[in-house]
Length: 170
Image (cartoon, rainbow, N blue to C red):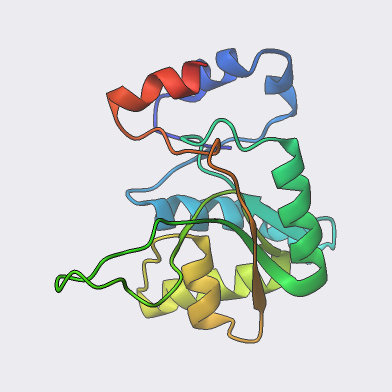
C-alpha cells in the first residue's frame, strides 16, 4: 500500500487486523511516482514469478467492490491489461451538435500483467514520462499489451471534493 510520508501509523491503524499482512511504500510527488515506487517494491516478487498480475487502485474510490477487482485481474491475466470504464453522457460540441464519439470515464482498479507493467514503468522512468494513470505508461511503452475495457459502475465514484464525502460515507 502506498502511503504519504508520516501516515504509515494512521493507515495501519485504519486497516486494523489486516495491517500486519500489508507492505507499505512511501509515495512520491505524483500518482505516477507513487505507482512506480510500488511497482519497484514488487520487482523481486515479479522476477521470482510470485506476482503475475498487479492491480492499482485509487483509495479515493472506496466502493469499487470485490467483484470489480476480480474481473480486472481475470481480464488482465487473459489479455494483458484491464481498466474499468463507465459511459459518459453525450458530449455536445460548441456549435450545439452532439459529438459523435462514445466517451467513457476510466476508473480504478486497473490491472496488468506484472512483467510488462514493470518494463513499461522502467521505460517511462528512463524517458521521464509521467502518466496520468497506470494504463498511460503501458499504452506508451508496452504497445504489445492489449488493454481491455471492462464495465465499471457509477457507485465506484471518486471522492474528490468535500461534497462527495456523503457518497463515500454511505
